[in-house]
Image (cartoon, rainbow, N blue to C red; front, side):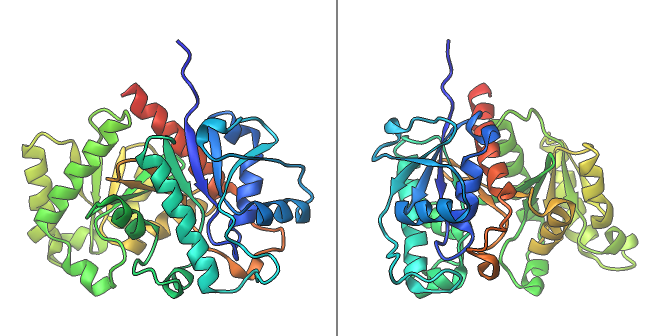
Length: 335
C-alpha cells in the first residue's frame, strides 16, 4: 500500500519580517519536499517579489484547496490570501496591516487543519506588537491557535537535535513562574507529556523533571521547592507507573538529554529551557504545540525586522519545523 506524503500547511508569518524570505528558501529545499507536500499560506505578490530579490528560480502554483498542490521540487504551492498591498507595504516595520495579514494566515492554516485538508501546520515568525495593533488579544501563536480551536491549555515542546523540552509554564514573569512550581501541576504536566509522546510513537518515555534551585537545592541548603513540591510529584508519578526521574539539576539535565539519557525534559519556566535549546542550536530549534486538534510546529525565532529584505535570513528553523511536522505525522500514523 502506498502511503501519501503528509500535507503541511506553512504560514508565511509577518510579511514585514523575514517570514517571506525563509519560506521561499525553505520550501525550495529537496530535503523538505522529499518528506511532505508543503502548502504555503501567504501573499503571492510578495512571495514572487521575494524570490526575484533572492535570485531564486521558483515556480508558484496557486491553489484554492490542498488537493490542487503538486508537491514538486522547484514548485511552491501557495494559498494566496491577497492581503499585502505592495505599493504601500513597508518591510522591516511594525504595523497593524502586517499583524492582520499574519493572523489571517494562521486562521486559514487552522481552518485547513481542523477540516482535515492538511495533516499538520508549521508557522513562520510573527510580531507580538503587530498582532496587538491589529486588535488581537493573544500574545502569540500558541494562545491564538488555542482560542481558534477552543483549547484551554496547550502543551509546548522544543525539539533540538533529538532533545525534547517541555515547559511547566510559558509566558509568566519569573517570580510567578516560581510560585507555579507545585506538585499537582508537575504531576499533571508529566502525565500529559508522556501521553503526547506515546501518540507520536515514543513508547513508555523516560521524562526528567528539571530542578528549580541550584544543585537541586543541595538537600534544602539553597531552597525548599525540590523537597516540598518536586520530589513528592516525582514519587506520585512513579506510583502511577510513569517512567520519570528528578529533580535533576538544571545545569546537567539538558546535557544528559543530549546524550539520549532521557526521552524528554520538563523545564520549569520559560528561559530555563529556551536558553538551553537555543545555545545548543539556535537555528535548529523547533517549537511544537501539543494539545491542539492537529500537530503544529514553528520556528523558534522572531521576525528579525533589522535584516528583513536583505537576503541574509537563515531558513533552517523553518526547514526543521516542516520536516519535524512531517515526521510527527508519520509517527502518529505508525503509533
